[in-house]
Length: 277
Figure (cartoon, helix red, strand yellow):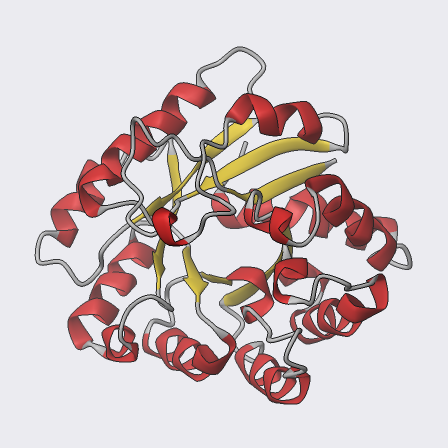
């Protein structure tokens, strides 16, 4: 049974998403009920909600939205990876207001901001505070920014990091060689983990199992089975596949793993990294 470490839910009447108007294929509500009906059928036993790059004034509303879903009887929802603005002057007070029963991690999307942001000393100090709170930080960068991810990890050695989407490889553009080198370097940092999540979205529409195989295998080879987790990246994965197809693809790609390795990848590592009960 899998823990999905990367589910996006969209509730447009409740939460403001400035970027959605530029993404017509995703610009609708994506509900928990819609996700759950598939998730329970394909072997997902728990899920973390990944923030949806909402407007800053909606962050705490989004976390409350997740808390309400967690309270449902029989809910799969295990917590939130909250949006945050580590560059903000009031970041410390924001951290102090977070409910640790709900918020299991933090993310600031970095491919939508200037590269200099993650290099700022104040930003890095606050990412360090995230680690002191016992919360991991998800790194969401494009392939060309993997060097920035390395620099941020080096600047915050006491914070646990999780690289989203295998580092967003340029699969459609055949960018494997540069991506491979950067991933190998990043994986040398023992406090960095990798999330194999919805990478079909970065391939051409006619992708096959063999299109994705080298990327998944290099991530596992570089990080090891004790530092990889699974995520759907639903609904973004639907741009080039379905949730069912992404799970089926994953199952084939890890078919040669031992039972211990499969358990670590499917749920054990996620439970440890995000303190999921």
